[in-house]
Amino acid sequence: MGTMTFTAAPAGEENSDPGPELLGQVARLVDLDETLVERMRAEALGAPTRGKVAYGEYQSGGWRTASLMNHSTDGDPHDVVIGDGRPRPTTLLNQMPVTRDFLAELGLDFMYVRLARLEPHSYLWEHRDYAELNERGRHRLHIPLVTNPSAALVTAGARVHMAAGSLWRLTPYRAHGVRNVTGPDRLHLIADVYTDDAYRELAARPQLRAGDAARLPVLTAADRNRLMERAGQLASLGFVSSAEQVLLRAYYAYALPEGGAYDLITALHTNRGADMEAARWRKAKQHLLAR
Image (tube, rainbow, N blue to C red; front, top):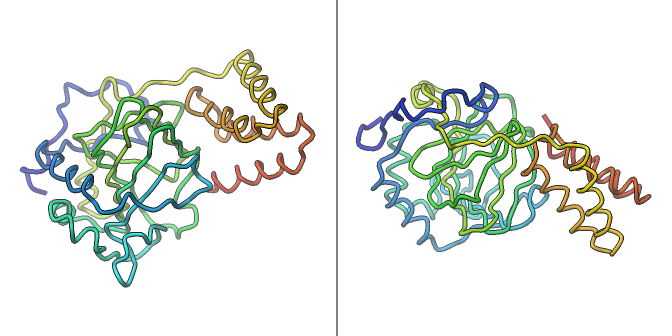
């Protein structure tokens, strides 16, 4: 890998104790050349598409993706459902020469590459990825191109801001969610890759620096009662979807047990006597967190 593009992250800026569970789920791998990031950002912002809404069951709305490498026979960037295989460049990547050359320089065994946009006031609910795919070593790499302090990944009971300027690794088969509260759009280049020697070299020094992550508070009984009361009031007024979203967003404010937000919604509907809705959310939990 070329020294012009990659530099080792400075050891003095590491968070001394991010915790092994969190570091196993998300980490900085290498720093990127600032000019390179700026040029890729310009290409992404100038792309002729904002992407396609997909995976609607995972989100509040506002999550859009456009493929740069996929399995489409005609290079369609709006074919955005990821899967195993040997991808080919899409027509969109062919319009982004700096990004194309960067991906080639990585020298990785790609499975899929996308531009992913999360608009303001949008959430990806707690979920796992890769559950429907065959057992293989896979990794997800994030290159933040546009972000803001309110844009954060939540996993392992912590909130992580994936700052621009670094290449990050996410372990997506572990439960996680993403939010963008205030905007502007969060725009990441995301590459799913297979394990090989090039990946092992790239991922040899995972780290989190001071300020990257913040531990979330535990949900107390009093907190739970306040959330359930607020959601119950909204539901009683007919704003059922708003009530559910109040409880879904609890995942981003508290260190809940896995699937805890879905359990809160199930309890809300059980208390209302809405058994079909309660059953629907129990099923949604199983689907979104399938192993």
